[in-house]
Amino acid sequence: MTFWDKITGNDMKKEFKSFEARAKELPADYQEAWEKIKENLWNHSDFTGRNLMPIMDSALYILEETASDGQSVQSALGEDIKGFCSALVGEEGSNTFRDKWRKQLNNNIAKKLGK
Image (cartoon, rainbow, N blue to C red; front, side, top):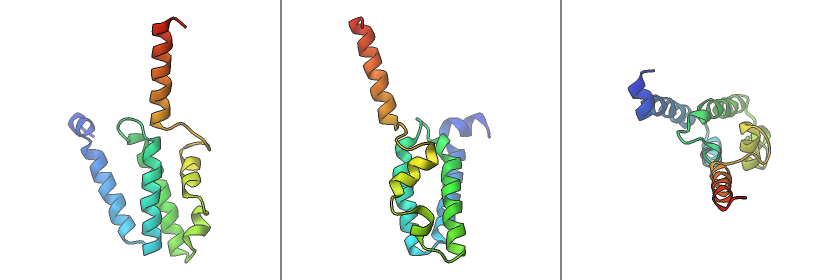
């Protein structure tokens, strides 16, 4: 990866396009689950989203394997896709980027107020 690719995110665009190509080969219900997974995972992203690429790859692999085995989406992910995504990123109730920013803002205000 070149410096330019890292700055512009070209490397991530290529990887994300490959994810989308793989997802289009899945059955319709799995494609819907993939869209929900993407929505829920982006909440746990860092500023660039690079931390999610291996996680998204793993989630897509799980969908591909269960689809090839003929299992339902629910058997792979359960009924709670949001909980599944939280489990993928680390632990249940893990911090989102909003939580991190809120904590940083509160710390900065506390410093200004001398607390």
